[in-house]
Each structure stands twice: as C-alpha cells, then as structure tokens.
Length: 349
Image (cartoon, rainbow, N blue to C red):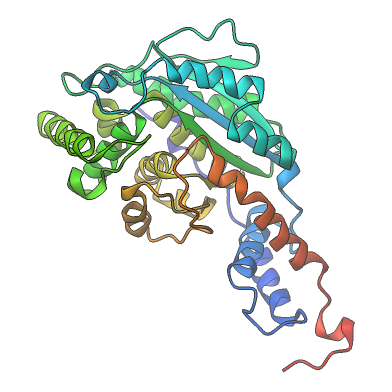
C-alpha cells in the first residue's frame, strides 16, 4: 500500500540557484565574505525559483504541534503533564516565547492539538486534530498503534495543505509536550544506532541523577521494542503524536515546494524521521540552531548539516528557528539590493 508521503517532492530550481551564485560573485564584496548569508540566498533562489528571492519573514507560517506522552509516568521530566495544555493556552493567548517572536516578525502562528491528555476544546485559536489523549507509556508497550502513527503523520499534511496560507514562503514547525525529549532521544538512538547516554540531556531542567534515570528508562524501552529499524516502526513504538505530525509537515511542505526551517532537538528528531522516510527531503530543510540539549549536536553531525546559530537555547516551541528569520531576510535583502561591481563602478579584485 502506498502512502501520501511517498509522493514526489517539488523540484528545486537549479538554474535559479546557479544564477544566484553567479550574482553573489559580482556583488561589491570579496567573494565568500558574507559566509553563510551567501549560501542562504542561493538556497532560497532554488526554492523560490527566483534569482532574487523574496523576503520570507512576513510570509512564514509557524505551526506548533502539541501532544502528551505516556512515558511521562516514568518520571523523566521536571514538569508535570498538565503543563502541556497550560502552555497551549499560553500560546493561544500570546504569552509564550514563540507567540512574541511570531508577532515581532509578523509571521502567522498556528497551534495544533495532535493529542494532549487533557482537552483543549475550550481554547480559542487551537486546531484540534487529536489522535488520542496522549501516547501510551512506551516503557510498557508501544507508544501508539500503526494506524495512530499514520494518522499523526497526516496531521502534518493537513496543516500544510489546509491550515497555513497558500502564499507561505517558509514553514517552521514547533512542538510542545512534556517528556517529548525522552521520545525524541529514543527515536534518535534507534535510527542512528546510538546509546541513550550519548544523547540524553537535561530536557526541561533535570539534575544529574534524573538524567541517569532518564537514560536507563530509554535504554530499557529500546531493548524491549527491538527490532527498531524502519522509521515508521520506530515512530510507532517510541514516538509522539506531535513528533510524527511535524515529520509529516516537513514532507508535505516539500511536496508543495515550501522549504522548512528546523528548530531544536525535538524538531530535528522529526526531521530525522522524515529524512529516513524521504532521504531527498534534506535538500528542502534548513537547520536553524544548535540547542543546549546534549544530543542535538550529535544528531546534527549525523545528518551532516550546519545550523545557522548556537545560542545555548533549549526551549523548543520553534523559538530558535523564529530568531533566525531576521538573519534570513538580511541575507535575502543583501542579495537582492547590493550593487554589482559594474553598477557601482568599482573595480573587481
């Protein structure tokens, strides 16, 4: 049986990329002197199919996927599960970090319930796509059934195709779910054949003993659920609804020709799953920052990608990605508006 996420991705416009690269070579600066900003402009030229790509911040769609995790019952988070829904309300009211950043950049913000333990029906502005009231405790049983996993992936497709604006030029996915660093770590361990103690970090603020406990919970769960090879199998056994939804969103965005800016550790775990499903997807992803979460650097290295920033952030909820919007627009503005040597009557080196 074929799945929607197996459909072709959009083509990157290589001609526009090449022409943008040539333009970078004749702007009034030493070649390569703007570093990653030059590479950003060239990437967006290929994605937009324009030699001078348009600015993206005001045409960015941010979606925060929220869900709860049964593994929270194992004491792997510094915060109680009730915080997930409390933060969903905070997103909707405009009080969260991502709410402030989205407003600052004039980006659209969408809040998606992928499966919280408590109802968010009364919260205005939340798109309710709940698969179930949180995943099962994967220390004891698979986190979800295969149909639930496919439904969670399809939430991402729905958001890209039906929720965000048609004129979206950049997609940012964020997540909220108490204990989701535990799920993300388990996913990365399984897909990258790494040990839990190589990747486990403080998450929401665990002390050293709690980190050791968290690693032992993950190790035992991974042993219990072997074999863990295929990405859908890994998602089903140790994943989260919001992690699956975000993976689906990355694929659906690329199918529509929309690049995605990937946030921190959990968003990168979603990107890892999506890239395991569709290896060519990586060409449609831009990685925003390296978080303070221990495993994030290791996973970025395994993906062979270089993030734009390293600000010691570990909040999640798309906050690190949103901070990058001004950098991206700066790169695009420089690319479009700097004079060439010929225009400025300046001798090239």
